[in-house]
Length: 79
Image (cartoon, rainbow, N blue to C red; front, side, top):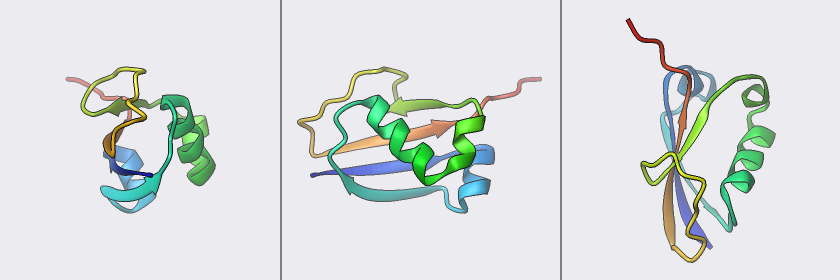
């Protein structure tokens, strides 16, 4: 089991109702994290967002790590 710290930003945080939480899981890859989150929060299925793993927009996940940080990043608007 690994500790997964999940950070929610912008409209995602508003809809989830928290800005962060920690869970225990055995995610094997980035896709398994995305599947878990979209099953838990169905609104994610219909919106564009990115997952950052340990502050990087990578697809790599160190499954041997005992903890990771996952950030859900909604689309950003600039001005």
